[in-house]
Length: 290
Length: 290
Image 1: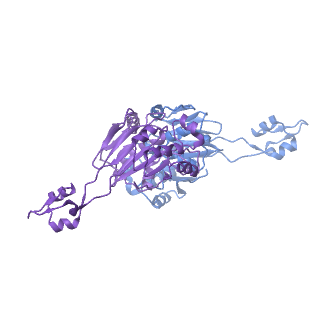
Image 2: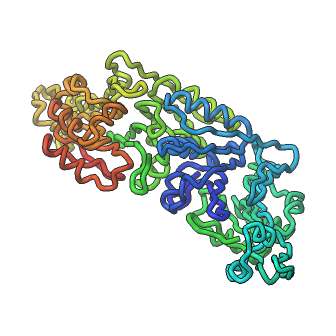
Image 3: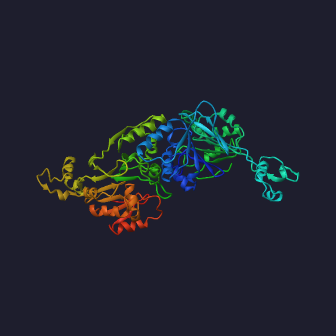
């Protein structure tokens, strides 16, 4: 349930100003406006599972795309039932749909690459919850080398020579001189990765699959004292989230998806930090750099 | 569309702490918490029509009722398609529904009394919008007289005598003395009424039906300069809302449902006030006494 200070789940992964939306709880479009995320930069939406706190904001967001006159295709990655829910709701509204939704259905059998574009891949990884549910793993691709602007002028490089240099090749000039690649280019930051893991039982085998992830978000619905309730409702406690991180060793762990019964979250943080020190709380509206 | 300062439509009619919810735009449950309205005091929800800005918050609210362990029946008044939308969404969540939804379907043919309880009646009145849509008119019933506490002691009134006095009868004491009713009781405030009119074309004939309403809420989506767009999308301008009020003569007119293109609403208020002076803006979170 939302509380007066916490909306339900939704996250934006920003990769070079391309926005990938993960989950879309009630009020997501309101929060996107509040935190100044551009609606038209969202072309991919990932819905982990079909419990309301992860997708009830989708109807309003899709309607607003229409009101904004969106023409671009929108890719939705979800379990299949979402398509019929969306179509039933939009069927009754009698509004003309201006853009196309391209559906990509998740499966619960094994990890699969569900998106592979210029910038990154996204993998779905089955979790164990009360309904079918998947984690999402974002992995940036190797970036091409960046060309030094001065070199272009100095050697009067042609466009085809610039492309070659960016791909790591040495360049032979018209006069026969070879310029070594490292004199022409510099590397950008190494590719990064992010895993979003909610809602789920504690699954160490999935943690094994996510070894050396850059940044990890893991649900921590309950405190240790509610371990039994966590297992019964197929959720995790803060220590379980931290144990998951201990296995996959991210640079940082973000915990979130706290039950609405908790006002103060310091105890979640303490319990997780005692096992995995570099843990932070997933706070409303905050930005985390990978 | 919602804006950063305005959620979509939802109102609470509070009649002696019984809450009647009208429309349920996205984020309604968040606002109910923010403005400290008790979820368990809501037993009746009225949905004017099936455009998202009037019902996309219903899914989250109904789910939260379940998480709160609600047992009481919930009465929903709407056009029939809402039932299948709700059932399709809840069917996929696989959660056990703890309380019963009692459906009351609106019709678009003529005004009808759709609720008649101890406190009030609610009438649905067909409007003209892009989909089937109804206004809702709340009319309090005559309240029983209030007994003066001192009279109970002074005349040692029995419970049956108190009931008689509340119903306006004179009381004959055991010694044969008749006590006139006005010496035992005082009247409460006269019954009040409230009409909620959105979304619609300008309909003076409906205004005629609402003559002498106590408080009127009327949509004013656009300014006068957008009259053509208002008509094309079957909405009203601020002056049209005020003309509607001129016909039915409420004590006060509240205008609302402003298009998200308007940041500042002073011009709406000016245009309406020039026709119906006792007009106010329907502001987020504000309480209006009937």
